[in-house]
Image (cartoon, rainbow, N blue to C red; front, side, top):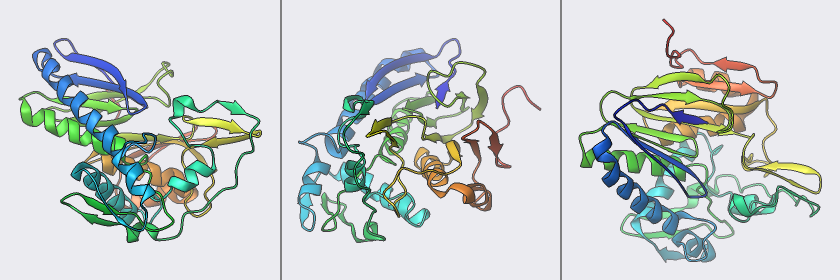
Length: 311
């Protein structure tokens, strides 16, 4: 996970939204109040349109009408377009049509409402239909057609997309550098960048690695968070689309940077799902990344930012 490091004179606010924590910082304290209001408004809009756990959300309505066109807020169309782009960049490893697959492994409500352990059956894995994400149809004016038999879940990209949206909106409204982290999906906008502390979980307060993020985004995907047990079987939210099973590869955490938070999160999620081939895939695409395997060993790609304080 990422924690921003705040210097004297900065403004900082923390609260919860989208089922996770929100950390907002601005380089000028006077900007914080209006920036926080902008963030709250946009997060409410994202939740109202993109949540899989709100019966009144546009996404839930579109999923219920799979196979037919559904009129939705254009904001949802933008979020789905970002998810489809992530799928295209990863050959479907980051797949937005995993709604039914996630329900099958027990992720059928907000993570805070899922019992950490239950004797209920683990559920039968449900693989995604290969390439179904290519059949999603969008009207930018405000309509979506979910493929018949599918249900969309934007959990792999929506928080990162929202972080980009909020950071860019606040930067456009002020002359202050801004950084926002949504559950570890972090976006920076404005001059100068921001120092960021890298750790696996928010409770890991040992000796974090500190890097300077000059612009864009930094995201962490991890199998160490959003976990639960069903029938003695450990489950988590990062699924392999080909099997419908939680990933079982060598990496428990991957952090990546990118020109946007969505780009960073797409890379980190794909790397977890990809497993053994992740380092080669990231290196070939010149994606800066930091990978932690199940034994705690750290591997960094060549372009990962130098930790602060090193030459």
